[in-house]
Image (cartoon, rainbow, N blue to C red; front, side, top):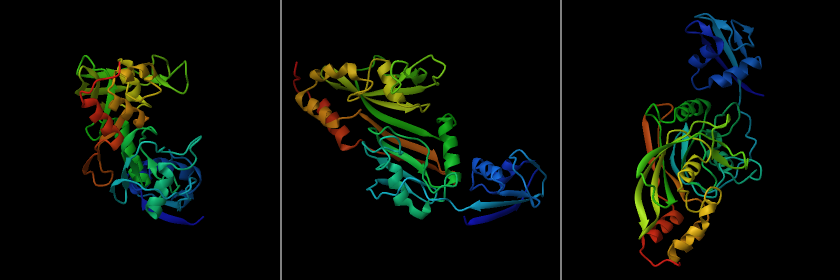
Length: 331
């Protein structure tokens, strides 16, 4: 396989993988660790296969960097709502119904397939493969903003920001949700660990089990909907990013999302409390009423603060409008 030769001198004594990451910041340290193990790195002309190998300041470092291999998922041309794009990343406004990553039952037709086609040669390789770097995901039936890395360095630096979950001020993620009822506390934080449900491994649940992970969701009721109120519009801000976190947490406090067949199944009969117009729009929504509306982060190369807003899509907006109208409900 053709390769590119990288050459530099270590600027300080220390581990080989750290020295390489400092010399070539466009390649991730994890990628260098893999290359070292493959025998693609020499120090003073001698191949070294240990990432922890100690180098001295001034040592000559040489890397045979293979060209990125073609991505395993096939490129598929699809219409994408591109909010922002440069050589390092792309921000997409994902529609509901689009799966982010190929997997069982979704080998094709995913956002990754679309991005491989859209980005083409601007993908320089994540872990040595020409594929988009998925930093975070949205559920198939959740709409909204998603950022994807185009190269190793951007993927590493964006992942660091998402791992900090906004606690260092760099990352901002907020969602709009329509939930059943109106929380008694109009503003609060739900701090409850989330893990796999012991009753159904396909679901997540608030849990104290060993596999549960810390999860914190901040919420604010923006508007009570209906007269009397039967639902409310809520803004949720994530302090952590667990699978189905908002859906699980809002159900945990007794206010599951409208349209959530997994975590709000017990509230299906509540649809009878809605006006005929709202019942129809909820049926047409056919998904959980959740939209990733705000995404802010620090650009991985320039450090510039980027912030994007996405208004609710048509199906969400129509349900919201119908819920606001004081029409008589079917009782």
